[in-house]
Amino acid sequence: MAGCWSWFLLLTVVSSAHAEIKFDIPAGKFFSYELMRETFQSDFEPLSQLYLGRLYDDPMVFKCNKQYFPDLPEWLHFTQRHPYDNGFLYGTPMSPGKSVIEVYAVNKRSYETTRQILVLNVYAAKTPPYQAEFFIKLREIEKVLPPPVQGEIKQDLQKLWDTEALDIVNISNALDRGGRVPLPLAGHFEGVYVKVGSEQNFSSCLLRTQTAAHRQQCAAGAKVKVPGGCNFCRIPSNCISWCSTELFDLSQQEPSPPTPTLGSGVLEAGVDFEPPESPEDRDFLPDYLVTVIVPLALALILFLLLAYIMFGRREGVDKRNAKTNQIQLYHHHTILDNTDELRNMADHRSAPPPLSTLPMFDSRTGARATPSDSPRMPLIMAQHDPHVDPLPRK
Image (cartoon, rainbow, N blue to C red; front, side, top):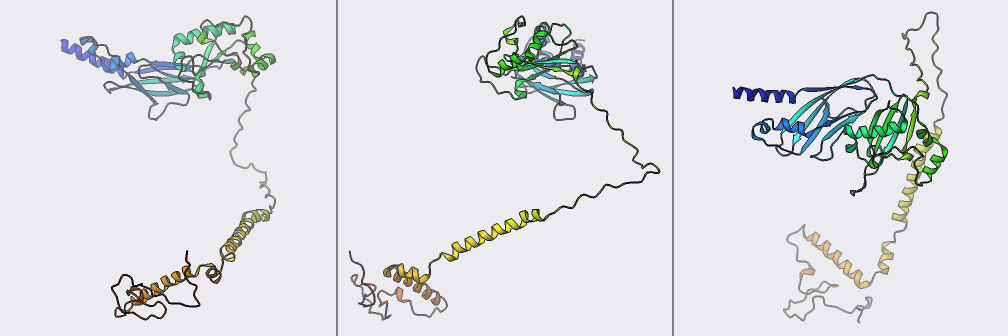
């Protein structure tokens, strides 16, 4: 009997883990849902708390996406600062519809995974005609999304608006609105925008933010003082920034023009069809000159300039030889002659050895001398030639 009862508890927990959670959300109203780590912890360890008395506090990472899609709907956002923090799904739907959200929780200790299904039914609702957006500088999005904190902020804004009929329209992170990432120091926060709406017109405190004197004071960068009798901030971290307050009067908006009616596409009887007139003739000569002639002219100029640099400014061989030292020139011609001689020998294996390989020879007459083993005998026997300048002496 005890075993059957244990299996019944296990099946109950498993079935509850995969049950769908349904929400009915009015369009234009703010929605937030907190993913509690304690709820998913009981799914990971369903029987350890009952029989063993163990209470785990494991780090968890949540992954959220629309069913059969890789990401969330456009209006829905997810945030989780740390694996030991709860996650939040939040956003404001603007059009009716149904969305099925899959929430996967990954246990970072045991790497187990569990799933939760959220069904969000968005129905049409009336949009509040008067809306106001406030900037709370000393808050972060994770600290504002819990329902108790939303209630505290709503109470302060109700006193500021002087009405109880006030609803939160949207809450967004300042980083999503182009704000800068704060320094990782105490006292630096990201900031949060809170938008509320009501059927009642704006109070006198809110209308003061639209005066020219208030705008001029904010543009000057001076410290803006709270208007007299309008400070309803009980908690310092919930105080709004008066220079970032914006009012939206949707009751004065002009109605959108009606959509045009589409006809059947068939011309009525007795009406002649008048085709549209052909467009005026256009002169394409300027476009042709700009796109074809100008690049060709530039290419021709560059070609002539390059040809002048490569061929017009080259010095001749005779001029270069006249400027070269005779000893250096003679050495250069000797290398060329020896190269030609070696190439000619490659065609005939029975050719005599070249003069440059003999121990000593006369470089001018080609006469070969008797080989000698004396190290003092020069390899090239120099002879006096009146047409050749003597070697330079130091």
